[in-house]
Amino acid sequence: MNLQDKVAVVTGASRGLGEHFAAALIDKGATVFGLARSADDLDRVRDRLGERFHPLVCDVTDQDDVTRAFDEINQQADSLDVLVNNAGLGRFGAVDDLPLDEWNLQIDVNLHGVHHCTRAAVPRMKAQNAAHGFGGHIVNIASVAGLVGNPNLSAYNATKFALRGYSEAIMKELRADGIKVTCVYPGSVATHFADAAGRSGSPNPMEPESVAATVVHVLEGPDNYLISEVVMRPLRPKG
Ligand code: NAP
Image 1 (cartoon, rainbow, N blue to C red):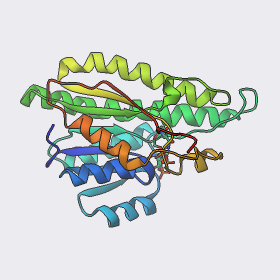
Image 2 (image 1 turned 90 degrees about the horizontal axis):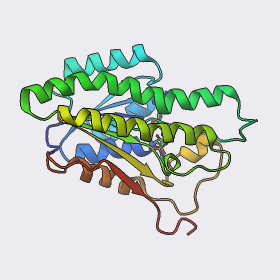
Image 3 (image 1 turned 90 degrees about the vertical axis):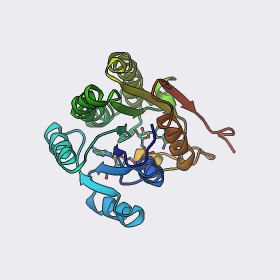
Image 4 (image 1 turned 60 degrees about the vertical axis):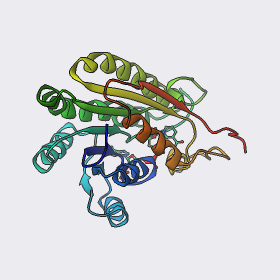
């Protein structure tokens, strides 16, 4: 897809990987609707990226909020070409110690949030395919934690393994509608993810710009060419 003048929705765009996905897409000439809960952080991103970035305060766990956000996008934008389901978080702890609300929060954001946004985007992408022969591209940001289980990550692993299954299912389902689905599995990336998770991050993480450049590469592939999964890791995770 040539990203010039295309319209993308990026969830979790108020910082971290989402902010970098938005920056990379805008750099290619796309317009980005950035969803997150923090209005101040979204405004800071708009100040940095300019008026092609449209902040939309939205909690992806809240189906009504997501419906409102996509209604606004559908009114404002001529198309909906890319959805990057990026909003997510980790809360780590022993399986018999992790508070239930932290278990539920991860399922809500990392899994239900992805489904809410996907089901809001797919009808318009299907209509675009019917009209123009190409629907769009959905990119789900999982993690290597969606491929490998580890101690104290049971909830996070469960959500990201589930996202893998979800992504593969809808990839096979939606390609007939001209909609590409790619699931991305990054290792440690230098964002505030580890702070928010309350643990120290990798000593030598990947840069978010590198992950964003890979996602742009995946999006820019020819129409009849689908990269369905990408795993990325730091070369020397321990430095
Ligand atoms: P981050 O810096 O903590 O950013 C997380 C983003 O998600 C923020 O913009 C946050 O915005 C948003 N978010 C959280 N809950 C939300 C909700 N209910 N509704 C809407 N937005 C919400 O973390 P990150 O590293 O960029 O993580 C992005 C994605 O990459 C996640 O899915 C994560 O699992 C994945 N990932 C990260 C790493 C890593 O090492 N960093 C590695 C592999 C995969 P608000 O707080 O403003 O809502």
